[in-house]
Image (cartoon, rainbow, N blue to C red; front, side):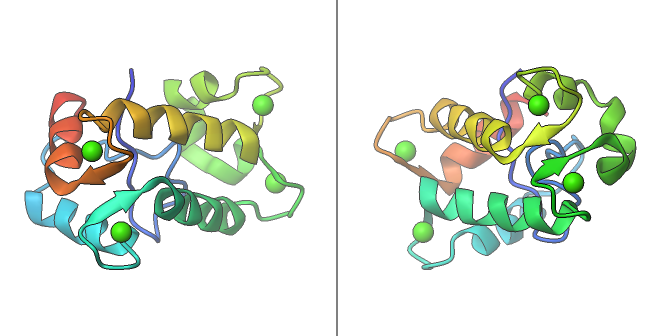
Length: 130
Ligand SMILES: [Ca+2]
Ligand SMILES: [Ca+2]
Ligand SMILES: [Ca+2]
Ligand SMILES: [Ca+2]
């Protein structure tokens, strides 16, 4: 169930719009990786991941109530990830719920536990959870 969830900056919502396409090319993943890697040191730390997460959350939260309702996420509302991430089952995703999920995913992907994700770690995580 745990997936690495680096969407593109323009994707509707990183947290619940994972790289769902199993056919995505490695090059796409490289592009996404470099978008998230804001300081360009070729590893992703949790801060970088959360910055993108919060940006996307705010972009998706059209009415600025700090919740992503089903209307705001569109088709993604029917994705099992949506209800999974909605830990208090109120039918909407709060920023806390989204961040919590991101941290879990980050830790699951950080296979050597050093607090940062290399491209290899991201790729492995992605490939094992298409
Ligand atoms: Ca970095
Ligand atoms: Ca909202
Ligand atoms: Ca909720
Ligand atoms: Ca690591």
